[in-house]
Length: 103
Image (tube, rainbow, N blue to C red):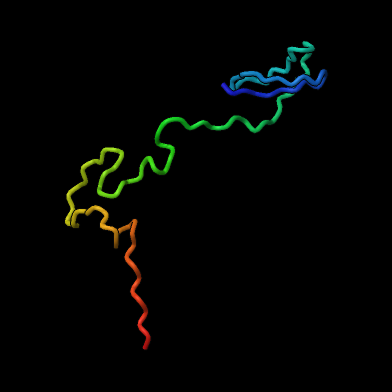
């Protein structure tokens, strides 16, 4: 259930209340016991990411063909098998561009 913020228009009391999303706003103020509380618009709570899987490095393949997660066997193909990074001409180390020839 979400937390809603309320402010009483009668006494000025500000408070929070847990309510169902489908429930109508409860206008009862616990301080002055009047039904003059109005639901406020708030920024809401932030997200807390715990555990693995939330960083770019968690899924990054390491040079040499090792990966943090178990690789599934690839389907057979006529293409040659991928080789480990050799330091040039691969996705992580592009080959140098050829020099321009002057005429």
